[in-house]
Image (cartoon, rainbow, N blue to C red; front, side, top):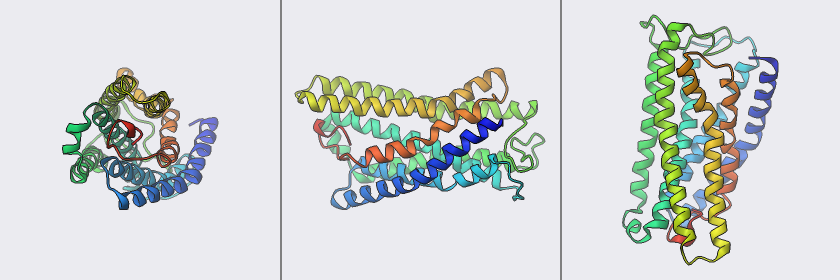
Length: 285
């Protein structure tokens, strides 16, 4: 990693820790207070999103320690464990943003029918499914990384660094795995999220809501979708490019940086708006 990349990464991660930790704790507190009054599906999803973001932020100091090139002795399991938590929480956040968009679309397009299925127990099952899906992928990679019987171990630590200087044999295993992760846990959720928000906007614009509420709904949908694409897109595009050229593209370490910002922006933004989806007037939840 070049010196300018290291400096930028340290600044971004440092600011994320300083702002992300209190903002996510505040957001989680707000959501828990609202849950005591009324537990809704999106409250459950947003609480899970906050917990995922908190885990992500709490493990960022390890990332800063790695990229700062400080000489430190670490057990063999540290790199794969950190990889599991750091990147797993990124995809978990993307998946929870997707189910929030689905809930908003169903609440706007099918408010009556959605009421029959808008139960906290269903949302808990969906949340469990998301954690299981991401955890399954993460544990597979963790097993691959820590299996000493595999000649081309994918992630060998290099001094104080993790997951660098891959051989062709390692990339032959790593590139398809990264591609599968991006397709299942980003591009598919992106298609679903785009469909849901475009459908929600179409329904709400044609509804009898006043113009102020319509504009507010459009802003929420546009902002959330923009966060999704701009924050998670570059990192996952690097997986696709890496698979095509069969190389660990140099800009991957920079592309992962935007993925930290939803932890700040969305926690602050969502904690300031209502989270019940009882009808079209409550699109913001």
